[in-house]
Every structure is written in C-alpha cells, then in structure tokens.
Length: 300
Length: 317
Image (cartoon, rainbow over all chains, first blue to last red; front, side, top):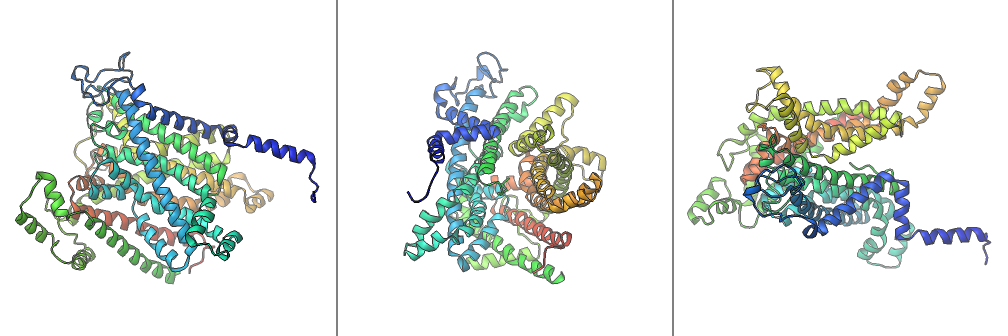
C-alpha cells in the first residue's frame, strides 16, 4: 500500500458505508430534520391511503343516498355527508387518489422535461440557449393558473387534459433552475473528457450531465408536487378541472359546500383541511430536502 | 441611466409580441376549429352554413397571418374585438372590471407586506427561537392553504359570528369609500395571506444573509445602537430581494384573484376569465391572457428600473 491509511479511518469509513444505505439515509434525514421527516411521513401516509382507498373507505364514493343528506358527523359518518348523502370521509379518501395522481404525474413529467430542456440548453449554449431562454421567458410571463386555465379551455376538462394543463406551465420554471446548475457542470473536466472520447451529445447529456443536476431536480420535483395539488384543487373548485362524480378535494368545496356552509360546515372544512395538509406536508418535506441538498437554491 | 431605461423599455416589445404569438397559436391548435368546437359543444351537430357564417363573423376564414395582423392592429389601438359569447366589446368588459381587480390586488399586497416584513425581520433576528418557528410554520401554511378555502372559512366565520353576509353588489370606492373597503378587506386578507407567506420567507432569508455581512459587524464594532444598525444597514440592504419577490407576486395576483373573486362573488377580471374559459369564449380568453401577461411584463420592467435606482452597485448595461 503506497498511501499509509490509519486502520481506524478505514474501519470508520467502512462502518459509515454500511449505515449509509438507503434506509440509513432515511434515518439520518429524520434525525437531522424532524420537520421534514414529519412532512415525509404524512406524504407516505397519503400514498398508503390513496393505494388502499377501496379497502379502507367505509362507503361507496359515488353512491347517492338521499335518505342521508347533509348528515352531521356521527358514528356512521365520521365526517358527515354532503348534499347528495355521500359520505365525506369516503370522498376525502378517494379524493387523495385524484390529488396524488395529478400531482405526481404533473410534477414528474414537468420537472423531467424541464430538466432535459434546461440541461440541453446549457450544454449546447450559444444560439440554441438564447432562443430557448427567450421562449421560456414568454411562458413564464403567465401565472401558473392562467396558463393552466387557458389550456383547459382549449383541450377540455378531462383528467389527462387537466394533468397536461398543470404540467406545461411547470416545464419552463424547472428548466430555468436546472439550466443555471447545468451551466457550471458544462465546464467540468469530465464533460470535456466525454466529448474528447467522442461520445454523442445525447449520451453526454443523459449519462454525464443529468445525474449531476439530481439535487435541483429533486428539489423542483417536490416543490412542484405541492403546487400541482394546489392547482388541481383550484381548477376543480372553479369547475374547470376534475368533473363530478369523481371525488376530488377542490370539487368537494364547490357549489353545495358554499351554499350550505352555515348549516353543514363539515362539507366546507374537511376537504380544505385535506388540501392544506397534503400541500403543507409536501412543502415541508421539499424545504428540508432543499436545505439538505442545496441550501443556496431558493424555491417558493 | 436613461439610456438603460429606454433600452429596457424597447426590450419588452419582443417578449410581448412573443406572448401574443403564443396565445394566438395556442388558440388555433385546437383540433377542428374553435367555432365548430364551441357550437358543437352545445348542440352536438351544427349546419355547415352556420359554421361558415360564424367563421366569417370572427374573421376565421382569413389566412392565419392576416388574422394575427388584424388582432394585433386592434390590440395596438386597444380594440380587442367582441366577445364570442355575449357579443359585447371586450375592451368595455375589461374596463368595467379592471378597477376592482386592481384595487383588490393593491390592497392584498399592502396587507401581505404589512404582515410579512415585521414577521420576517423578527424571525431572522431571533433565529431558531419560538417566534422564528411560529413565523416559519405560519408562512409554510400560508403557501399550502388554498386562498379560496380561506375565503370560504372567512365567510363562514363572519356569517356565524357577526351575521355578516357579503353584499351582492359591488360599491365603487368613489361612491362610498368605507363600504367599499369593508367589502374588499376580506378577499384582500385571503389573498394577502398567501402573499405574506412568500414575502416573509424571502425577508427572513435575505435578513439572515445580510446580518452575516462584514459591514454589520463593523457597525456593531463602532458601537452603533442596535436599532440604527437594523434601520440603516440591515433592513435597507435586505429589502432588495424582498422588493423583487413582492413585485412578482403582485404581478401574479391576477392568478390568486381568479379563485378568490369566485368565492366572494366579486365581478372582477378573475371572474370574467373563469366565465370566458367555461363558455369557451376564445376571443375573450385570448384578450385576457394577453392582458395578464402584459401586466406581468410591465411590472417586471418597473421592478428592474427600481432595482437599479435603489441599488447603485447595479450597473446599467
């Protein structure tokens, strides 16, 4: 051995490595950032609820029961029923499916496409970069919800279209952040080396640059998750997102929930709590993830 | 300085033009065409003649470049054409509602900033104390709470506690200022809370950064009173990013208003926009999207100018 490494150091490194597996990383994160871990726990809980909705929900989410209209919360209906006699808790549980489906698909597709565009823009530089940036600037001049609403107006409001409408405004926002990280990576010697080795542009972007913008990518992804859920509930609340009788939190706050707000406040209170809790949890988790991975990055 | 202002002013034109092209293209990549889509959406089938006459009415039988030219020429003269749904002049529809939305946006920003800056500064000064934790939780919650739900809760509480029902008719400020403010303060609070959340976070992080600067240590070392250090050195320097984020949020308020106006039944631009989208009124949607994007671009222009004016270190290129 040419380099003299003290035995202790080797052992400590080995012990660290054994603990630094996937689970070890999770435990470490939970110990250092309790708030973020609490957010993460709520996220895991929501995912479990969404996956097992058909098992844990006490009633059928779409069955109308006029005999049980606007029932107060009681032993049979823990969170009461709505104007059609549908169980509020059941619809909340099924609503988590809609929220998470839209949230995850929109955030993943949006930030992935954004990352590819951002890295590509930084890698090619020059004219391509300039034109892409100007193009992104135009998109960013629209508030998220305005662009999403305009897209819904054009495509019509089915769930896939709602997802598209939420995804599109996210792409340029993510591309902008990823591009700034990728700009510094482009100057790294290993990218030069890859180019010198004659690798194709696609290979350099996908294999060498993308893995190195993983930190901002994950941060944007979690930030978008909360925003996408909020956006979906806003669209549904306006009647321009998910349509009845599908269970969606924003939709539950629409119409009867406002009309009967005084006599049946449970209809207006619980779905809003569910939205806030979900977005709060995703943001808390995302915030801590950002602090852990890249404290200099500012996200909303 | 003036050279920069003029240059920056003219740089807005390509972006605005790009925005206009983008909306125009978006509205025309619809499968089929918008007249067909709109009419068929109501009845299921339409006669070829009706389609033809409707297309001619909105100039959709013209070549694309000509349509765009006509639209742009109208926009330059503040003539946005007529609504596909009501047939009313779009310029008039917007004019009727603009004042309400602008007032609401200004009030919400004022409310938000008034909460955010003291809270953010206190949170940074007492980092990791209970006040910091409260401020952080309040602000993360503010970003997570949908403003329309907050609006519903407010109406509910006002109804139950004060027996107060939001009035159906909007009272303009110049008719009865007091009644107008009472009517708008609740929606302003609902929207302002979210804005305050964003601004609090920015204030906190900017203050934390500034408080670690050398000049703050110097000011302390020369024995300056703590309040003067804060007023003259820390807050002044920390306000720049706060100003930027406030400007962006103000420009984006139209988005926040879209849902809140619905809850409080306020006939502003947001409500008009939702109605336009629901009725598939393409001409009106197109005009409103352009308006909102223009507001954003123009506010950004003023922010840039102000930034340079407030911070002499920023050089004009």
